[in-house]
Image (cartoon, rainbow, N blue to C red):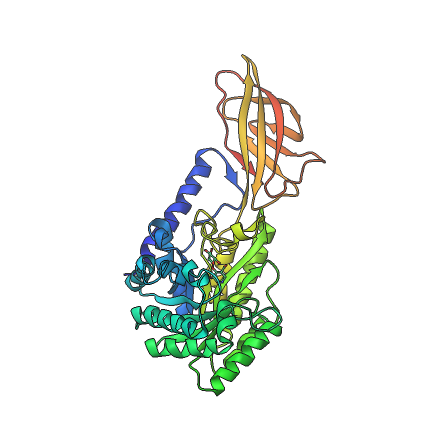
Length: 456
Ligand code: 9MR
């Protein structure tokens, strides 16, 4: 069952709630988000382009807002860890399919594909396997059993398998792993053949990172796929992981996707994230939007590029922060599930024409400091988050006869009940993430209510 209706309603409620908060405390948000049409879910936009849009997920989180978004925005799920050998067979012969089953059931309930990830890798293997001493024949038999068992369990339920993960070094030579060292490069063809035997309808992929542009590593992958195809080995696709750095989308991405497509295989962007040095700011988030948009656009431009999957859709569920200290904010939703500019970059590359809401705002807040029987000291603080100002002007109307007598850190004038304050020569700039305060003395009698202020 699809839950997009629930999710879109939640988004509108959230926006309405925030707008109410700003008005309620007498703040003015410059460029405050207008109510706008409900966004079309990414999966619907992708479907209109003949593409699938996916996300890696953590099974235990598939409830609440995380579950709503995973189920409504994406048409494919990849278990982030749940199908890895170390997860499914931590003790030899003793299997734990709990999280994998849960994700597959969730996907089926939401009309989603599942990308199986991953069967043959050098990481996240069980220690009984990596600590064992095996003859090549034993190793080969262990691998065949693993593939037959796992692919067989989910036969007919997995659209595509990342059969072999990360087989190459950066220079295009084969990575030294338990598999290559024990079995030679034939382990790749054998793994594909065994997977095909266990589920003839699943699309079988080789998946790697730093193979997004044309380079030595992607060329080694290209030559491998070409060789496998010529030998009749069942290879259906290549996965370009795309763990990218802000501003560094390879310029040859589309050309690289196209050359694989021209070999007669599908291409998927399997693990897209784009990390930045923290903290994020509006400039970095705008660059990230452009980067996500260009990656998705490169896939949209090549008909055999079938799927773009993000490696976690929220900054609260990403491998980046713990792996690259000081870096993060790599996904399309922030940690509170608000869509970031990157989300709209994906949507635009998929054909959306919805105007994204403003990404940040500057606000002005008025407060009364000390007050005595005829006068008071007041202050106004202008704060910017996700936006900035190079000059400012704050105005308000006094409704109870208050009269400004003196101001500092601003030039203020009052005409009747209307007060108008502009920045001083030295404090017009309010940077993203910072604030500026000015103060004043004023007279009052009777009552001294807080006025609504306007920032312009
Ligand atoms: O997202 C996964 C993270 O939770 C694990 O700790 C990590 C262990 O290596 O693996 C992450 O996923 C990786 C994926 O399986 C293969 N490509 C690189 C991904 C990021 O490390």
